[in-house]
Figure 1: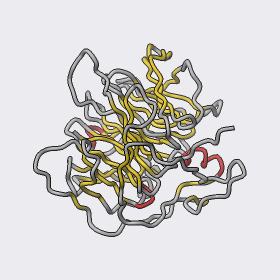
Figure 2: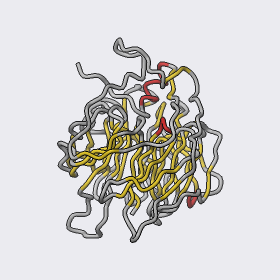
Figure 3: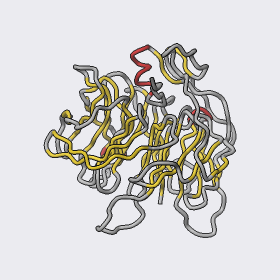
Figure 4: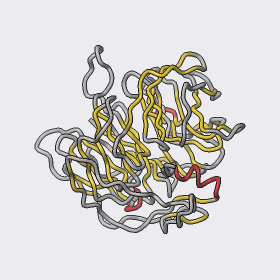
Length: 347
């Protein structure tokens, strides 16, 4: 039987066991790039399936750790697309050239950076799970533009509405809370997603918000939607079963639903409360991908989807790049992280 994978989402299963993620020490990664996938690892973070608990997971609240050293960014001769990796247990967000996969910077000062999102201006928002904050950086910037604080719990993920600029933040507090900050600032409005736990959310191009979690009635993994203009989440009937919830993303054409349990992305369209399956991407060679991201660099209407997907592989302490929606074996891998959770691209 295949082991379930546990990443930041491991916290979701951990909630049922009374376990939450804690960060380990560290200051800066030394990422190395290979043209094949990294060795598979085993994430023994929870006392599950006979495995011993990892020291990175403890009962109660996360241990807060602030990374040492200053944020830095190497000078660039010309503009570049940047890949941001939330190196969570090292408490850094490491920055790479998307084209060369060479490290060009690192952001520090976090407790436990889990996942990230990007707005139209290509600003990067970091969900700092341990501190519960959302920290915003300009593309290539080393100093925060602003920090959004809240009192609802641990921030596990975020998404920016392309139609309004509103910022949605999933809060891992066992109550399925999603906060929405108008135009990405000010005082948020709290919504209940009708899920006992929620993972990183995603808006589609029309301003509909989607989030995975556990149904608050059946307890089964589920996908719920907050339609644009609505104040109530509703359940989406899926043509497949989710083994273990993960992040949701917009790939430029479809809502991409992640399943950590099988390292698979399902592309769907939604009509009313029913989803139709449009495609499936298997992230081959992956151990435990929590957040994946599909960058879209062109504006063509013939193929609005991105053609690459990058994911943070918690179990292998690596970040992988795959063809999308083809999937299969990774085309590139960066190793040397300390249990990375999130990955996004800022153009």
